[in-house]
Amino acid sequence: MKQTDVLIIGAGPSGSIAGSILLQNGFNVTIIEKEQFPRFVVGESLIPKVMQHLDKAGLLDTLNEQHFEKKFGARFLKEDKVCNFSFAEKFTDGWEWTWQMPRADFDYTIAKEVEKKGAEVLYQHAVTNVDFSTGSVITSIEDKNGNTSQIASKYIIDGSGYGRVLPRLLDLSKPSDLPPRGSFFTHVEDINRPDTIDGTTITFDILHQNLWFWVIPFSNGKTSLGFVGDTHFFEGITEENKAEKFNEMIQQSDFYKERFSNLEYEFEPVMKVGYSVGVKQLFGDRYVLTGNSTEFLDPVFSSGVSFAAESSALAAELVSKALKGEDVDWQKDYSDYILRGVEVFKSYIKYWYDGSLQDLFFSDNINPEFKKQITSILAGYVWDKENRFVNRHKTIIKTINHFQKEAQSL
Image (cartoon, rainbow, N blue to C red):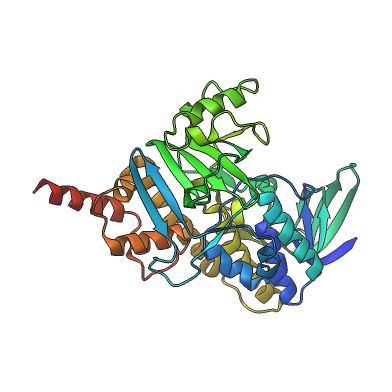
């Protein structure tokens, strides 16, 4: 039976960041990945908080070599109004830019780098069972040909993302308290891309209060397009009419319909419905959940990879301490911390879909200091206790809008 110090499920950002940090701490790492990389996955827009973890994990140099499109902020459109956020103008100190890129290329790049650093990555292997009843954790795996084997480890980190391997095997999943929503997306060769900032800026075009359109340009000339909203917006879409329906939805965007109408899609548009999920606990006896294996919220603020990076970097450091015999308070130092950030983002997602955050974004007199603090939220700094928009996340947006309306009525 193969032996390893830490077995990681998933070679995406969670698994790769955790694996690299564990290698830095002197541990053997084996990563089990169900797919063959490169493979398509959504989540193509990062936020600046991610960068410090990529740096810590020693993954920035290889990523810089890929020349991905740099992301310096984000733009929101609603009818004839525009709201721009610059990461250079935020409340919290930290990175002022990040990347927008095809995730297949991003994930493949960092997974290869972690292999170079010494991790063993077993592609096209699926975890079928985990046994915690012995001194070692025994993980059963199966390759693409049906061959089975087992790996003994001291700890497991689950970074399996949407696969949610341990939540499924250990019955840890629970429903999200966010309403079910859907997404509908594809890539295009952006042949009409303007040679201006409009051509490279990530943009969210609000078509209705509960339906928005993402436009994420890549440096390779392609652009990711996607719609996110309440599930009723996607009724009537079938396997046979996906391309037709996608083009119909593009016509709702006055800003983008000329640029993207009737283009050939790189792949048949993909639809996902009811993707928000929760989990009963983030850790247990010799295991910890990271990234989308914990909570997946909503793509509106690009928080997915941010939580993957934050949780996996922290989990790797805490696992390293535990394996070195140091005391670790997993509840306080991991679960409480991660869920605090989840709750902040969750509040702003709720604000977004009830319209109150959109009202603030597009108000004519948004306070510049408020905007800086909101920008810090959008950049991923949701653990900054100096930011009132973090500390008062449950009420602050509605309170500000209330007072603004009162002032306007005087």
